[in-house]
Amino acid sequence: MLAKTKIFARLVGLMSLMLVLMALVAGFGLYGISETKSNVDGLYKNNFLPVKQVDSAIEYLYRARLSALGAAGKPISSRTSAVRSGSSSRTSS
Image (cartoon, one colour):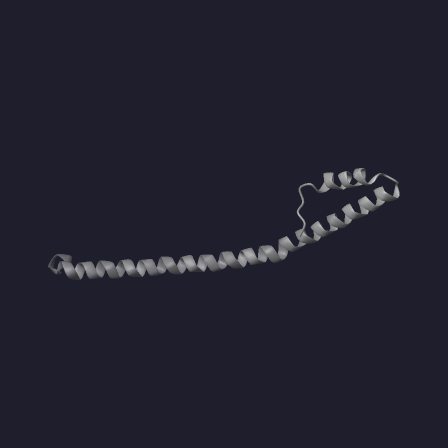
């Protein structure tokens, strides 16, 4: 069957088949990217926002700890070092 066709026709057929396969792979890739984006958005909305709330709660606890140390009559340097020891790895946002 293919023996009687010209090389040009075989090359055009092969290139057409490759083009269709590439379009299918690209379509599956774009679908996968959109699914990943929606999953990451859901992860952010459902899991990351509570982390930010916990972070602000910890910040309020550190402030309360600083106030309690101040009420106990501790010097300022020991109060700030006590708070820094608990929040040295935190970043303010």
